[in-house]
Length: 543
Ligand code: AMP
Image 1 (cartoon, rainbow, N blue to C red):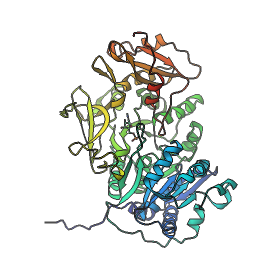
Image 2: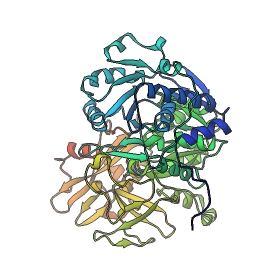
Image 3: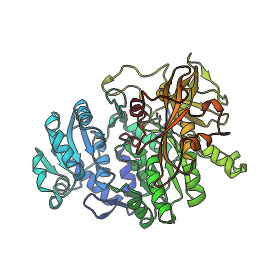
Image 4: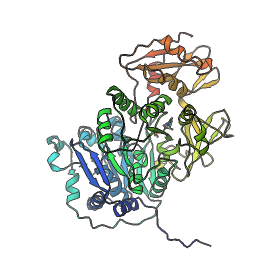
């Protein structure tokens, strides 16, 4: 017997329809590439999205066609999120920090028909345009008045605001199967070519519901949310969709990702919740600490994308009263998998014990199931001290890569994440490493993240990466690569002594090298493969 409820496909357009009808006056504030602060509302944004949807149709963009963006977080980018996906085309968010060769590869692989870009990226677009065979139209996301003279270098150039202004907003969002593709993100491709992950309307709407839950990102209409995480990094972790679902104020930082610009926006717009990778928060904390500032409205920040050092969680909590929500996910997971929020029993814990819980990546949000397995593929029970390969499944986790690149990625219906983790008796998952970053010493594994977290707790350390260095006896031993805080004094012996009593003695790094900077990838993660290459001939003092 079937249930007798309405059949309504879960479509991304329903989110903007809801926001317009029920939160029409709620503000969307953007720092623009043009240099000013721009203000709009969900009502205006919805109308402009409909106009843009008509403009795309006039350009011949149909169901399933790919429309790429090369843009910061801002209202025009958000309009495209709805205009493109809402009309049945596929929004392909490109990461402008990628090497131009990789960018050209991705655009060609995706067969992007239109490429919309912020003026910041005009030189990049001009350089790669001749190699982008599939792109029929380039759209500068600005108005005519701000178009620089060298824009003429780009063929078939259109101006975004002119496209919007040429249409009226009388447009009904089409209704189609909820399994229709909605958006496309490529993995960062640290090894080999990047692979595409193709989200659907259904997976996106379900991810939005789950992401907003109190034990997930805990978003409501009362919030003012500033996603620092870029809209080109797994859809800003879903926040442009969550904003519409709950009617939160959205604040977009545009190109202003330095500590000063972010701080100003947090304060002037009354931001209550933010989200980003640890490296961004380092810049912000350095600015706030350096100028003796406080956050007057910010209550919570989501930190993920790479492990959040426990020292950062404490600094946010103890010094600034900002609660860190440690989260884990990946492009293949839309991206949310776990968020570290407390269970009822944690209320009785001391503050130190609570911080210990918060340093874990958290528990699965409903919709995601996870398990860790040993090298034979057998599940390791929750509560075991042993770590293993982390596998996940759920309705917003990929089943195949775009164009079937790489064949079937699943094992028994589960997606192997490539992360190594353990799960405690309460279901809290802790990543110990990426499987390719694990240090294999004498047949045993050493988790590099634990070693980095300890170094990061030293007051003189700004950034630390732990990599495997070759060792004649033990095969591999930990080598710590460290950036000191400006002006800080620290010797190798002092840092090694700092490990005493904090971990098993045999985990202690064998050597420390101080460097000016650690290479960061396109999404702000430390590029350990580059460091391994750089230090492949490093001679350990213990060797
Ligand atoms: P991406 O698909 O580029 O977002 O990268 C996903 C990968 O980033 C995951 O598989 C993890 O290795 C890493 N990652 C994401 N969040 C965390 C976190 N909170 N702690 C440790 N690693 C993380």
